[in-house]
Each structure stands twice: as C-alpha cells, then as structure tokens.
Length: 421
Image 1 (tube, rainbow, N blue to C red):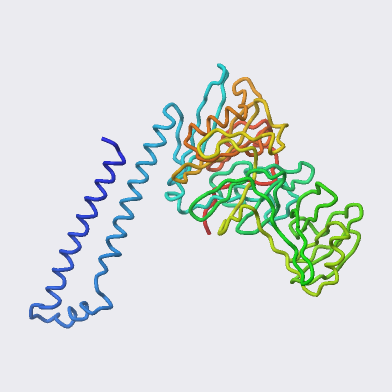
Image 2: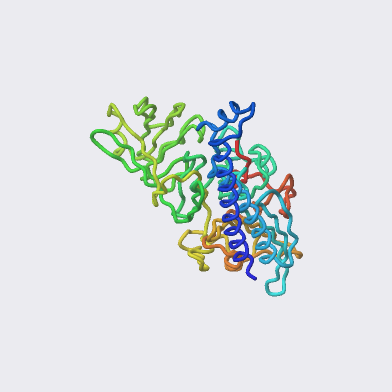
C-alpha cells in the first residue's frame, strides 16, 4: 500500500478519534461541573468550571495532530531519501537534515558526490541563509568553510557565490537578512530565500537615486566597475573609502538622505551611508539637492525575500535541464571539474551538492552532467555555484568532501544551515 495514502488515512482516523475522545471528555466535564455531587470540594469544582479555565479542545487537538503529522512527515522523509539514494551512505545530521555520500559513473569514470537534503519544516530550529566570511560583514575578507560555519553556528555549509580572488568581494547578488551587500553581475541567476519557500531567476539591479529635481539610475552596489558610464553605490561593507572615480567621474557622499560631501576623487564612506560614484554630468546636479533618497530594488521584485545568493549558470529551470552558460558569460567554467550546486524540489526541500574532481578517483562533472543529476534528484529549479578549487562542503563539524586544498581554500562567503537565535 502506498505509504503516503496509508499515512493520510491514519491521520484522518486519528483526527476523528481525537475529536470524539475530546468531545466525550468535554461532555463529562460539563456534566460534573453543571450538576456536581454534594461534597466538601464543591467550591473548588465551581472555580474549575469558570470560563477562564475552560478546556480548549481545539488547542489540544491541534497540538496532538501537529505532533503526529510531524512524526509522519519525518518517516516519509526517511523513506523518500532511502528510495532516492538506494546505494548511498546516508547519515542523519539533525531532524530533517540528511547527508548522503555516493559515487556515480560517467563514461565509466567515477565521480564522488556529497549531497545534503533538507526538509525545512522538520529542521525548524535552523535557517538556510548566506554568510559572509567576516563577522563584521567586511566584504574584503576570506576564511575557510570551517571558520565560516562555526562563526555562524551552522551544522551544514557549502561554498557560495563567485568572488574576486584578490580581495574576497563577492561577484554577484548577495542579500542577508534583507540587507543588500552586493548587486548582480551580467544578469546572472540567483536564488531568493523566503520565509517558507524559494524562487530562482536571473536578477537585475533596479535602483534609483531620487532628488526633488532629478532621478538617477544606480547600476550596482559594492561591485567592481564594468563601464565608466555606470553609477555605483558603495557602503561601509566595502571599506572606509570609495574606489577611484572613472574618467570624467564624480562622487557624492550621502547620509540620512543628505549630501554630506562631493568630490572628483575618492571620499570617506559615511557610517550608515553611501558614496555614489559615476559620470560627473550625471551626479553633479545631485550634489546641490537638499534631500536625496537611495532606493534599492531588484528585478524581479521579490517582495518579502529574506536572503539572495547568486551563481550561474542555471542547471534546471521549471523541472527541465537548462544550462545558459553563454547568456550568463560563464564560458570559463566548462569541462569536467569539481562542482557546487543548489536546488529545491516541488515541496521546498533544499538540495546542496558538492562534486569532487580533478583526480583519478573522482574526475568531476560537466555542467550538463551536473544539470542531469540535479534534475534526477527532483529539483524544479537548480543553479551552479562557484566551483573548481572553491568546492567544499561542511557537515556537522567537519569537511566531508575532498577539496584540492585540504580543508578547502579560504572563501568570501558560504550558504549555511545555521541554528536560529
């Protein structure tokens, strides 16, 4: 008999049983409270029967059903994982968190794969989110995955989005707890993490610097300059001062919606404010405005999104293999290599994957092979993250894959499953 059908029938039966039992208790209690026998504790019974201490059958029923449904969900999750990974080594990390180790063969060559699959409803004590390497949120920082995981009180972590090797600044959209740290690069794909769901799309920066007489499009935040015509905002997370102006460039410092300084050269970044850098002909008029407002937004407009992490290219889109490497200007990430990927299923289970490569015992995957693998795991959407030497996975206190550098290279950021609070 189908397990889910059996569980649903059990739950319906339990619901009826609990309702009937609680109704019986309620009728009996009302009988003895309304027509109590004559004995010395009548006053105590009268106090017990007052409205303030009435039996809330709804709360009791919901609590019992919730405990039962979570138990059923946990059993179904166990069975689903065993069926999905029949020849793998499966470890329970925590409630709703499974670590799976397996080896697959492509063209008769072995590939070692580590997978973490998470039912976030069962793993209710944890939150999936990006984490920067610096505890002070300084973008120009790099640390090992183990350090990032321990600093964020995490039981699972994988390397995150691409970053500039020389400085550690993330290259692509990164939002943590509703705060935008860096903007998109080349319109690449990103995953939005909401309170109870996920979304995936190619994200663009859609922000403006508004004043009473003018409005300026801001092309990015805390990212290296691509074109001299771009207008880019820099916050304290970038550092103490803004980068140099482009040719014919200009800078204005803004704090509390007021211009505090203007210059053709670098400026100190105000605490809690920004320095906007771009062409002088665009920004100079703003310098004389009494009030300015910097509005940060993305397209698509993900309302109520908590976190965003970017990568590229897509691997799975709407349940179909979809690798848009050329469109996202990722021509250098082809071939068989170590790989990191994330995706989610129709019921919002999160899947995190680390593939070992560049060695005889594990040759790595092409992007098409990785895309096929993510689809086989049931991902409705999936994307590639930074790979190669960056690929590393941490589970329950240790690195579980075999990165080229023992323990993994130092990273700019990671995607972590951290304990709430």
